Length: 248
Image (cartoon, rainbow, N blue to C red; front, top):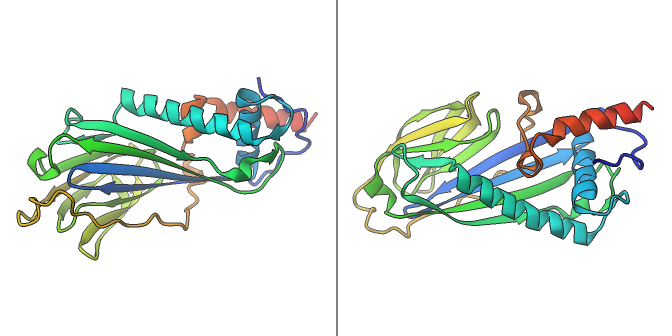
């Protein structure tokens, strides 16, 4: 269970934000999650690592962070393998999970009660059995409701409609069309597109778009964290316990 012996006060300015950066290619796709914790949320994350990954001494050491990294990769891989969060023409049959990467912030090292900001990156890589243009013109994503999303499509793709993205904006950066906005309350979004046949013969054509760095605060919509996939349902319970103990 969570040790709170070293937590003497709990900040009231909890903050958490999460962005999704999805890059769709002709034969593959990457989904990058960027999360940022501060205030109570960062204390909770350190507490969970110390309790579940470490030796409950109130301090996060490098070896505990390495265990968290390894455990996160394994659990994220298992979670996505069990339930794919992308479909082409309403099916994931032609999509396979090709890899998972994590970059857990070194800022987590130190006392559990440290209140500094923490930024973690998670990336899931997918491979398409057949080139995207041969599979149809509809791609579906299951994200976390209320979180920011930036989706780039292959060069010269024509986006004909977007569903399930609040405040959606479409545009073209270079030759790469994109959609940005927020997953709506369902977390499901669909892009309907068509391909310029002159470029479908070149499955390697893909212009990379960098992840936005100005993380948007969507705390009011209470998105869950990838931490909840590692320790399901733990975040809210831990927060409540920390608050109670801070009043003792």
